[in-house]
Each structure stands twice: as structure tokens, then as C-alpha cells.
Amino acid sequence: MKAEIISIGTELLLGEITDTNSAYLAGQLPLLGLDIHFMSTVGDNQHRLVDTLRQAWQRSDIIIATGGLGPTQDDITREAIAELLNEEITIDPALVKKFQELFSYYKIEMPPSNIRQAGVIPSAQIIPNPRGTAPGWWIERGERIIVTMPGPPREMQLMWTQEVLPRLQQRTEGTVILSKTLKIFDLTEAKVDELVSPFLSATNPTLATYAKADGIHLRITAKARLASEAQQLINQREADIRAILDDNIWGVDSESLESIVGALFMAKGLTLATMESSTGGLLANVITNVSGSSKYFRGGLVTYADEAKAAFGLDAQLISQYGAVSAEAAEAMATVARDKLGTAIGVGLTGVTGPIEIEGKPVGTIFVGIDDGQRKKSLAKNYPGNRLQVKQRAVTSALFELRRILL
Image (cartoon, rainbow, N blue to C red):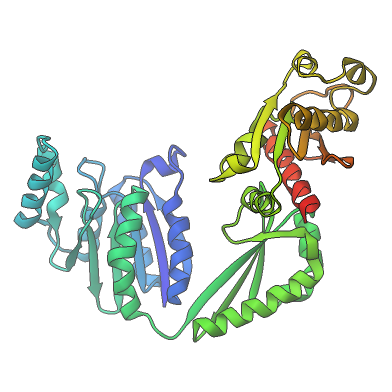
């Protein structure tokens, strides 16, 4: 069965809101064995929305639309579907009563415009919304299904898991599509593509590469009659790829590099401190995004100016001799962080985030220094991108090197 996702809202087209609903649903539908052939985004214009729905109706078995179910005049999903199916919208008194009870519970006067959300057409079954006032619609006509859900992700996702997913599971049988993402660092997308090229022509499982802030993601997707069969195909291909990419694979699926590094620190009973210049505290921020990081992370020193570095004990003569953006400075910063905060390992991070060169070093240059009490080491990298991208890649480099040392 072919599925199509339609996201509705002018704010999506203007870039004011990121469309996370489509990404979420794109990850859910394959688990039901549904092939997603098309995704569309359309603004709050009834004529264009009807055209989009009509096209989807002609080419897809299941249409899932999110957004446009609010109480305002620009929420036109209900009207567009009614026009598509040539049906009339009427107000459901039972829904109006539920709205009134909900507003009364929160001691808020219900605006008259909310009554629009109680509109329904004869073909539609109401899908309850446990987190809002906008109910969804479930429509079956012939061999087609249309599902509408609200735009706010927290409302949409709960409606999906509690109401829509169970109904679709009853109607979809025969094929399961599973995927697994391997996360890779220290190799370019082109290099990854080259190394796994023997498997790129395979149709089941398939491979796809994506460049991300934390490296290259390599997705393996398999289709089979049973989930166990699809999983076996994925496991076989993953083993093939690991034999080639080896240590460059640092994680899978939703794993984050900072959580993996944190788990290694916990397992080894070690502590960590950081001293950052060009990244302005981003490394410390990312490390502390992990719950329980206080058990191994003592703290971070943000020393953006050379005077701040010297104030914490970094030798001013070293900076004068080698520069603040250098391997020597990064290693010395790691030592200062380790000594000042009394940890097993210290990390120093310095670089050039742009837009101009510093000390004759090009934008994108970064140095990571690490001191574990027995030895000091540093690595130098150069990354393309804007200031934020260079910062993110510098942080990823530091975490990846920590992982390498801890392993």
C-alpha cells in the first residue's frame, strides 16, 4: 500500500516552523509495511490544498494530513476535504458540548470560533484528541483512507500512537519495512559511499548516506514479510559494513556521541573537565545534555580571550610562542582544566570559527588537546561551514577522540 503525507500551514512554507511531523510519520509508516512515495507541504489556501489532496487521492492508498484543524479562518483542512469529497460540513453537538466542558474545567470562556472544530462530514469518523480541542478525522471511501491530525507535534504524536496507529495496523498486513542507522565520524560522505559501494546496488536491503553535524549517517533499510526476517537482513548487512568501516562507526539510531562517551566515563569511574576558547562552552553544554553527567563531569572553563586563559594559569609565553590557536595551546588548556578541577582527564579546545583568519590559520581550523595524566596528545582538523557548524564539528571531534581514548 502506498502512503502520502501532507503537511498543511503557511508557517511551514515560510520557514517559521520546522516540519517535524512529516519526519516523525516517515519513521512510523514503514513499520506498518507502508511505502511512502510522496510528501507535500501546502499553505493555508483552500484551492491549492484541494488540488494537493486530489492529486494524492489519485496516486496513494493512504493520505495522512497534519495541520489546519484549528479554530481560525485560515484552518481550512476540513473545508478542503469536504470539497474534495463533495460533502457538507455540519456541526456535531456532542463535540461542542465536550469543548464547553473542557473550557469550563480550565475556567476559560470558550471563544465562538472553537465551534468550527466541531465540524464533521458524513464520511468522517471523529478521532479524539486527548491533548487539545482539534479532533482528527478518519475517512474511508472505496479503497482509500484519509486521516487528518492536528499540527502541534505533541497533539499529533499522541493521537497517532493511541488512535491512528492501532486502526492502520488492522488494515495493513503482508510487509514490514525496518531500518537501522549507523553513525560514522572521521570519514567524508564520498569516502563512506566509496567504501560501501559493493552494497549500494542491492535492492534489499538498501543503503543511503546522509551528512549530519555529528558525522555521516548510513541507513540500512530492509523489507520482508516478517519483522524477524527484515531484522536478519539488516543484521547481515550491518556486519558487512562494520567489517569495512570498523572504528569509524561510533553509534546507531538514536544514540548520541555524548551519551556513549558519558557511559564510558561512568563504566571506568573517571572524571572530566574542559577548557574551551573558540567553541564558547558548547562542548560543556553538549556533555551536560546527558542525564547523570554530574557524576563524571566536574565543569568547564570558557576562556574566550587570551587574558582569560592566562587568568586560569595558561602560560602567556606559550601563547606568545605558538599562538592561542595551536596544538600546544590545546594541550596546555587540557592540562589546566585537569589540574584546576582535579579530574582524571582534561580536554582543551581552540580554533578559528570565522569569518576571518586568526594567526594566519584559516577559518575552520580546530585543535583538540587531551591530557589523561599519563600523556598529552592533540589533533588538528579543518572543517568547512559557518561559525555554528565549525563549533559543532569541533565538539564532535573532541567527543570522538575522547571515545577513542576511553576505548
